[in-house]
Image (cartoon, rainbow, N blue to C red; front, side, top):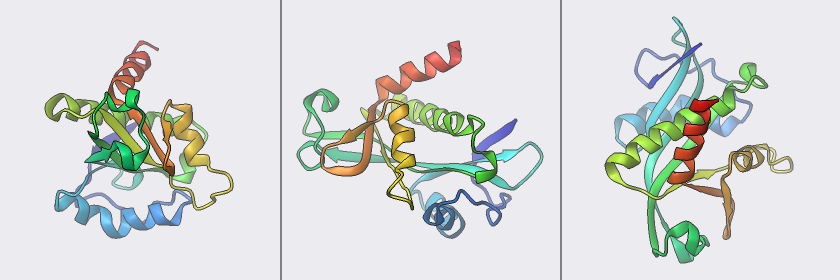
Length: 175
């Protein structure tokens, strides 16, 4: 139903609204530059035949320092510095909410991270749950539902092992 592709100049960003102003603004004002400069790879969803972006995510390599992050020994594999990937942004237009597309978008992002980890290594997948409404913490609950684990020292930072993502992708394919 949707095409998933790397952001390019033909994609229309101005109509996107996920309900979180900081995520809308990043897509419109910074996504092309971040992608072009190698800061993050930005992927967008569009309806077949349409250039309008209706969902997006950005991924980039990252490193966590166990003692600074509050990562457990099990999660870190016993290492003090843990390589991984940050899903730097993930957002879906409000018009698509409630249809399971958020889960599909996350699986798309996880699939790309797993593919990158097969080439470049990496143990963890990191997300920062962004909510303009900090009372509800909808984004954090969304990630926790998909087995991301909160990190001890940062309230809205969550992590998942790449191996957990591999298992989740396998399970989704079998469903």
